[in-house]
Image 1 (cartoon, one colour):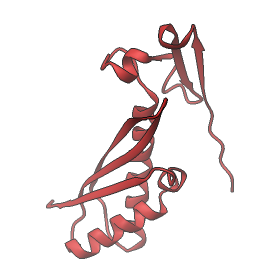
Image 2 (cartoon, helix red, strand yellow; image 1 turned 135 degrees about the vertical axis):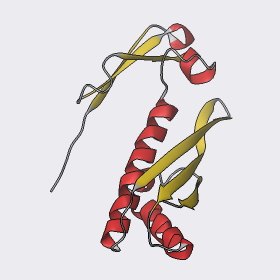
Image 3 (spheres, rainbow, N blue to C red; image 1 turned 180 degrees about the vertical axis):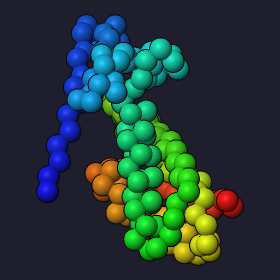
Image 4 (cartoon, helix red, strand yellow; image 1 turned 180 degrees about the horizontal axis):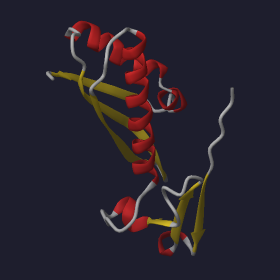
Length: 147
């Protein structure tokens, strides 16, 4: 089985003065703005590539964790994941040097050791974690919450 998904971006203008728009096949993003201000200057009127990578990684990891729990015979009642993506300057360019995954989940009837094991399995098996393997540091802080 192979699944293909598509997203597109259009950039108009020169460098810092330019503006872009991002769209996804599903329409979840449709000509959504991005640019220098939303990437480097904290402007909240648009998005940026790092935020989108973080959203994709958090979503993928949350699903991978839920599937790992299901395979182990555990029910996930809620799985909340954040991915903080850090962009740093490196020479004349930039590099994503760290992604911090934070997992807070309610999984009844599981102890913390098994929870941590399943979280690490999910991190290792998550397709986005694999795709982002060039990132020097991907960390995971997993917290088991009571129901």
